[in-house]
Image (cartoon, rainbow, N blue to C red; front, side, top):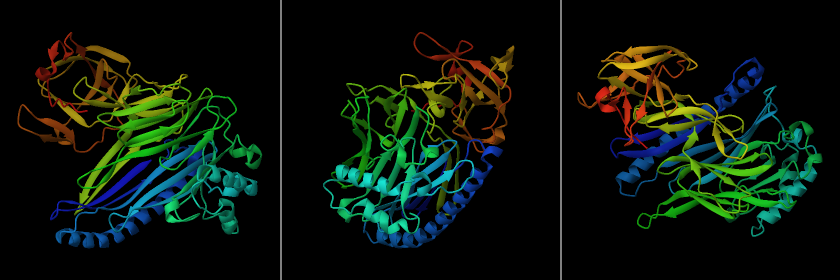
Length: 505
């Protein structure tokens, strides 16, 4: 999934006037088997692009008003139109997308809207609600019952009543998704009730009533994963096999600055299971429900001082504090500036398969090196790295101060020759690493680097990453750690051999 951010900054006032964020869909495998789906994604992305253009035009007008307000001393409000995209399911039957958009055109008064898209994986065609739910009347009867349980304090219209109003149009206005667990319907604020009632999100699982769903769309595999949208998604399922359904949800945790009164997110709270509740501190948190070997886990990716993955066993008697220093992979980053508009793009990993997903691991062999590795959910529900050798995603190069004795390895990491030397006065770029013993590098020309700092204390950053798809031979540099914990190459301290070593995280 490609994330695109456009931010408008003004040099005169020195801060952001507005920010637009959206996401485009991209297949990992664009082979002939998925040609129809790829074409459907292109049409979807075209609509996203057109909407971004329209939104930017509106924001440009609002930016002038915001700038005037700031210069007049009325405070700062960054206008927003930011969309989070959740891949609720992606397999050989269906791809289901939820878009959750926060918008603020006036400053200080945000609103939220949801939209969805559901594709047939083979044909690429849009799937209709009634293609999946063959007994819609029974479905909404169950939704009514669940709404009464989950939103008993809200004075809302029965969802079935709203469904009757939109049925004639084929439920075109209904926001719905399909996950491995079941079908979820989303009602934005003021659709079923007043503004104070908020939104309603209700899931009816396949296990509750298999007969009302088209068999083709009922998930067949035992293991699965899908995102849990923090804030208003309540899930009901039998966690421990006792025949009773339990409620599981995830809510954001907020704090308020006593001086500025600014409200900001400080973490996620996981409710449900034998753990009761578990607060995980940080920001940019994403939660996923994982089912593995008939057990349920909540995976939470979050950023605090480090990027971490918490894996909570929902059957566990106590909440665990164990975490792994992993984050979902982000690659192919780019940044460009056109006038006062900064545009960021990045390709972000989506977690849709327990058997394989790409994560970033951080190591410190030659400074800080971030590597992308394949991961899976292990039999005990914990993340397990599937590949020892990971592709480096950081864009930092090094300069060699002296000859380095090393080996040559092929594209798969097999040793092809030993007693090879990388000469002094070379620029090397890490391509692969295991983050424990070795770093595989190539030599590159200085023209591909931006150089910062003074001679002897410089560091080197790629100015054009044309090496992200490199799969050829590399020089393997072995790194040893002495008794005091310092890394060495060829028996020497790193600073004596390299210029440009950087540490972060």
